[in-house]
Amino acid sequence: MKNDYIKKKTILLVDDEPELLKMVASILEEEGFEKVFTADTAEHTRALVKEIPPDLAILDVMLPDEDGFSLMEELKKEADFPVIFLTARGEDEDKLAGLGLGADDYIVKPFLPKELIFRMIAILRRTYKKETPYVNLKNCQIDFERAEVLNDEKHLRLTAKEYALLYTLYRNAGRIVTIDALCEAVWGQNPFGYENSLMAHIRRIRQKIEKDPSNPESLITIKGLGYKLMTKEEERDEKRS
Image (cartoon, rainbow, N blue to C red; front, side, top):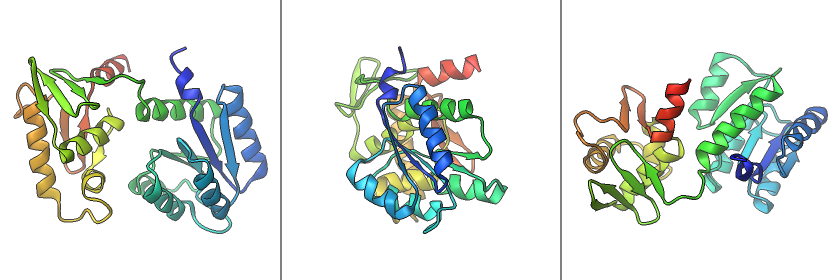
């Protein structure tokens, strides 16, 4: 099955409601997820992440010893895995706060178990691509193993920063990646003031991957927000939806 490799990923559930933890873990195991771990406090979560780094975490916002927002920020400094917030806090400002901090999704309780599963699988598929050295774009291929672009029979080397930017966009292919998130991926935890440098790197990447860099078809600007990379796979999915 095409999602078999996804079901082998390690999933961490964090919530202070024992019944909810038990229910979600049971649902995931019934869906075929083989590695599901649970924690009921921030402290327990930190210890568990050190011992068993997750491939995806589902976090409650309201934990007894810390809020989930600050916990996610701390965990993501150590390892970059996707996070879904699953919480009773459903105000718009809460959703924007969670997504603005870098969460991959935000689901409000009560929730539909199938919806949670579908969203999880979509994020896992997007984050952990099948093992293949090539990413197909409209006008070229990216070979991340060799850090180069194959365009019109030319092998174009990627610099370290171009690689970091493209890989971050690829991990979020089909989705908007904010300017702040891209700057952080390249320049670390103090990414402010690098917007002009980011634009220069984006321009150079387009010269390597686009047929017409002035009218990009793969690395799209989302005005006022950031950028989006469209692979052939995402283009097909978008046409089907």
